[in-house]
Figure 1 (cartoon, rainbow, N blue to C red):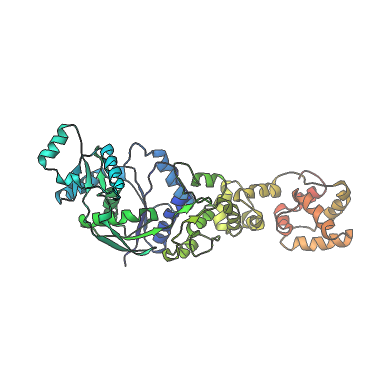
Figure 2 (figure 1 turned 135 degrees about the vertical axis):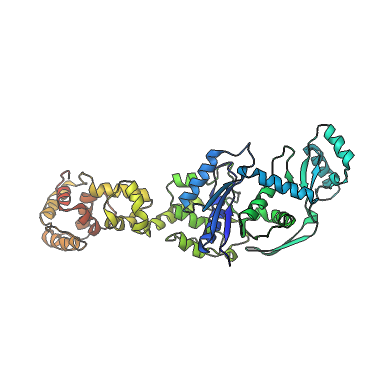
Length: 448
């Protein structure tokens, strides 16, 4: 089998949300797992609503998720290909001009509903002869162009939903080209999937009916028909659908809130499947969990309140190799020893900065007056360097014996003096990072 080719085709008309990320991630991870190609294709043929800044934001979001595309296309660069495909369909008698206004079409739909009929286009335009079309053109009407469906059962084996079929007699012939000559989503999508060799289209279940139409267009253009899979959609906890227009759970907002990209990815992919939402070590581990057959048929509720805990668990298991460039970007030193010492106490990655300041920055801790003599005594009992992970345990035994203190009375004053906090990483790991001079100074209440 040839490597898979999958794509994510957002419209750059707003910031993408976690539901869009679900589609992008499933496609990218299936391509990664199969050694294939992941394509980002901007559906920007609607010039009035598409914005360059949104396209840039989408690319940034995919980079943040760790799934930069192998190839990027803009449909606005490919208009000549769509026009050529439209001409082929016209020549084959599959694309025909229709002149009704939106008001006239809405009146037809109301009359059909009143008669208990489905509001399906009646193909009146097919009954027009050349003279009839010329008369409408003389009135200043420009046609929109409809694809003539075969009116048959269109069947496919859906990667998520199993065997599917749609009777296209129940559908209106779709408009592929507007009266102003611009293209709707359907034709460019098929033309691009053919040209780019897309092997599987994985998208939301709101596109199921579109699939029957697109299969007919693939066949009319003589192209291979890719596989299709339609995953369930994410909703808010209230059950409301996500909306780019309303800014629901945008990736930009989740990133700004400090959530880990890997945590967002795991939640976006795993919620609404037979897998428990869980932290993953990396995207390869998440890719191994992607199973189209494991996706539920019911909508999946995405609760952003679950993300803080998932982010913390993701940070806790993050290897130093993954943390190193991010620590460097925050000007945090200490190397692997520091990261392993503090990661289990972080709710968010950026909290590492405060612990690095605790380890390395000059400053005194917190000393209660009644503990001052005890801490000074403990400072005098510090062993000589070099220090390692066993130093703290050996030192504590000596301090305990000399002071007679134990439990909270022993450990709490030491932690407060050294870190200024009541809880935190194991002091056994922090002491070698602080060094003897800094530890002694803080125990004595000096700025060190």
